[in-house]
Every structure is written in structure tokens, then in C-alpha cells.
Amino acid sequence: MTGWLLDWSLRNRLFVLLAALLLLLWGGYATTRMPVDVFPDLTAPTVTLMSEAHGMAPMEVEQLVTFPIEAAMNGAPGVRRVRSTTGVGFAVINVEFTWGTDIYQARQIVAEKLQLARSALPQDLPSPILTPISSVMGEILFIALRSDRHDGMSLKTTADWTLRRRLLAVPGVAEVISIGGDTKQYQVEIRPERLAAHELSLNDVIEAVRASNTNASAGFLTAGGQEYLIQGLGRARQIEDLAQTAVPARQGPVLLKHLANIRIAPAHKRGTGSHNGRPAVIIGIQKQPAVNTLDLTDRLERTLADIQAALPEGMRIERDIFRQADFIAVAVANLRQALRDGALLVVLIVAVFLLSVPATLITLVALPLSLIAAMLAMSISGATLNTMTLGGLAIALGALVDDAIIVVENIVRRLRERARQASPASVEETVLSASREILDSIVYATLIIMLVFVPLFFLSGIEGRLLQPLGFAYVAAIAASLLVAVTITPALSSFLLPRSHTVTDARESRVALGLKRYYGAWMVWVLPRWRWMLAASCGVLIAALIALAMTGRSFLPEFNEGSLTISVVTLPGTSLEQSDQIGQMAEKIILQLPETAATARRTGRAELDPHAQAVYASEIDVR
Image: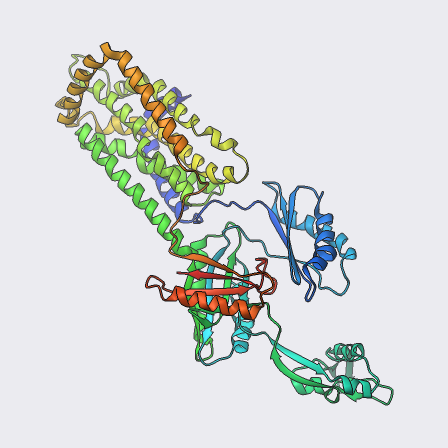
């Protein structure tokens, strides 16, 4: 197969070179469109259920909410395991499916099972909800809304009704969760003595308020050729609307304002937030899986700039807390720098040893073509540019020119011999025969190198999801380098090498000649002492195995993201107010460090937040 490909490439040299140019253009365009992320998608297909049970103790929530839902989910098609977290007034159930399950099919299965479980749940509780689809690296941005002029209620209202809705409209955003501030609430404080005087119960008042706080449609009225919509407007828009609610009583209807005190006040909360030690609303933005983090962050930044321009005077959006795109940009830049430095090193070494501009150029063509071909293969397969795929390309970089160097060196040697012959063969025949001589060797050597990475493709679970992209990138690049050496390298050699000084002058570089001389002398000394060399090699191998056994182990190395999260956990049972004070003290200490640029603290949990953190715990993000 490779022999036929070699023959065909030399017969159609111009077509092969044109195809290589088109590959560079197409691959370069596809590379710029590839999603960029920190890691490959490490999230097993997981559907998260949230259930709010305000006021219920953890034991009650577990027995009445968590257990019935878990029982319904266990045994569902494709479910691998069900994990849950239960706290005061909430339950979070994670239904994990086998790898490869379509996430939308998984959500449909969970929704069907949830319908069966609802009959076993308390009727007075809100229905459990499915949280949006996200990923393990989904939190891409934390921002803070703060003001020195507005109270916590104004901040929370703006965060929930302006920022959240605008940010959810950005394509690629899965969820926006805010914590901190005060939720605006109409509060009706019943006066028991007034209820007793009118012989009313608390349920009578609740039903009256619930029934009156609705709009009713009464059809249409046609008159004078016009049609009028008849509607009863009962929904409360202000305190006075609630105050005029009529509560049925034996002696006649009683207005709500005569039975209770009505006011606007903050709702009971289970979480607080602060930025740099000052009260604020902390907003976390989660992305959907397989969304380009860098592109989404740019869209969010533009949206936040537009929102900031329309906010009331004094309100500020602080964006200095956490930005995953910064870490991705630094990681990708470092790997690209490594690729650049490696490529320059390869260029230098090849130029020194071959001592020929045409031979060096022919050899180095394998670098961009192999890298672009590998990225194109990753793009077609749906992979992302991340630390693992770029790492695989960096590992392969030094080996990408191996096959091309061998082919070019043998072609140069045969062309020199041809120049000394009285009746030489044609250039094409010489290049073809020289390439055929080493064809089997480079094919077998490349296949052996590729086989080393094959075990990575048999890894399962999160290890496979993490390491398979590295192996795929490496194998794709090495396979592309072999294809280049068999097709493009001979075609270019037939054009550029016959008239080069390397062939006509038959000269070698001094570096190559010096290495040959020293290597020959070394072989003369080593070969009679092969037993000693074998023993020394075994000793080095044993020492390496001992060092490997003593080396520490971790699943992933430490990453310097430029930010960290500090958890402050107090004793269970600590109130939110006390936990908030302790969090403020910790935040104040952290801000005194000269290296600290900004902090954001989240104490407790937000409404419908799957991050099940108790009120006695705080998380401080430090940048």
C-alpha cells in the first residue's frame, strides 16, 4: 500500500504539492474554529435534580424527598449510580449514567422516572426540578455586583431581574446563580388578637390572599363595532393592593389591613456574599458542555459592559474574582511557546547536520503539515484544544521530522552516487529507488512508536477521558508525519535536491563528520566490552525502577491558576449570622496579604444552587 502511494506521489508531484498547500489552508482555518478548554470533557453524563423543602429538617427531607426519588431512579436504563446530598430544607440528587449515554436521552429518562416519584412526595412541596446541563469545568466566570449607595435588596433585585436574565440569553450559558443581598418580599404579619376577634383562622387568611392575588379573564364585550377584553385585575402590585384584600368572616368581609401588618422586607435567606470585605451579590456563570470557553467569555464580557452602562449610578460589576479563560489562555500560550521553541530547535539541528537549505526545508515541511493534519483530525472527531491534546502534539514534535530526515538523507546519498555515474538513471527513478530502500524501515518504526500509545485507548472512566485525547493527538501527528515522508518529501526532493550544493559538491557538515569519527572510536572501545555495558545498563534500569517506586503519585499535577478557594467551616448548627461574621474575619486577614488582588466570599448557599453548602461554611475565592 505504501509502495503504491509512493509511486503515485512521484508520478503526480504537482498535484501532491497542491494538495499539501490546500491541506495547510483548510487545517489552519479549522484550527482557529476549534473549541478551547482546560481539559477534555471529564463529565460522565449526569442529570442533577434539585428539591427545595423550606423549613424541613435533614432527616425529614431524606425520608420524604430523597429516598423516594432515589428509589425511582435506581434501575433506570443506563443509570450507573445515584448520589444524593440532603441538608436543611433541600435535597440534591445526582443521577449518573454510563459513559457515552446521550445527555438529552438521560434527561428524558430521569423526567419520566420523576413523574412516577411525584405521587410519593409531599403534596405541599414544590416539584423537584432538573438543573441545566453543565460540565465539571462549567464555572467559567464569577462576578460581583456591589454599590456604596444602594442597599442589599436593590442589588439582589438588579442581579436576579437584570443581570441573570441578560446573561442567560448569551448563547452557551447554562446557568447563572447569585448569592448575597436581600430578596424583596411582601410580608404579611398576622395579629392573632384580630383573628380571634373575627373568629378567623390562619388558613382563612392564607386562602383569601392566595385567591385574591390572581387575574381573572371574563371573555369579550362587543359594542359599537369594537371588541373589548374583560379582565379582573387582582394581582398585587403594591402594599395597598394587598391591604385591600377581603377576608370572608361571619360578620362580613374584613380587610387584610385590619388583620395584619403588611410591609416590604427582606426574605429569609440561607446565604450571603461579599467582595473585598464589603457586602455584594456574587454571581456564578456556568457554561454548557462543548462550548468554547474563550469565545463565550468574550461574549459575556461584551454583555457585561452593556449591562454596566445601563445600571443605576453607583452600581458596579466587579470582574476581578475568577475568570477561567485567563488560565486557559496562559496554558495554551505556554504550550504554543513550547511548540515554537521545539520547532526552532528542530530547525537548528536539522540545518547543522544536513548543511543544505533545500534539504532542511524539505525536512521541515513535515512539521507544519503533520501538526495541521493532526489538528484537522481532532477537529473532525469533535475534540477540543486543551492541555492534553496540545501536550500530545508537544511530545510528538521531536519525532515528526524523523521519517522525513531518513528519506531525505537516503535520497541525497543516492543522488550523489548518481552524479558520479557515467550513464545515470533519471532523477525520478533515483528518488523512487532511494525512497523504496528505506520505506519498510520507516513504516515499521513509526507503527511501533504508535503502538506504544494504543493502551491509552483501552482506559475506561475518567482516566480514559483524560488521557485518550493526548494519545489521539500524538498518534495522529506521527501518522501524518509518515504520510508526509512517503508522499510530499519525495516529491519535493525530486524538485529541489538534484541541483543543490549538497549533491553536486558531495559534502557533509563538520558536525556530522566529527560525530561519525567519535562514534566509530567509541564503538571500537565498547564492542569488546559488551558484558560490562550490559551490566551497566541493567544497573541503570534497576536504579530507575527504584526511583520510580520512591516517587510520589498524584492523578493530576498542581496547577497555578492565579487564584485559589479557601473553605472556612465552623461547627454544624452555627447560624448564618455567626458564620457570616467568621467569614468576614477570614476575608479581612486574607486581604491584608500584599499578594491578594481581590476576594469574593460565599457563605451558605443560594436558592436552587446544586452546590450543597451548609450555612455554617464559607468559600472565599482569592485572586
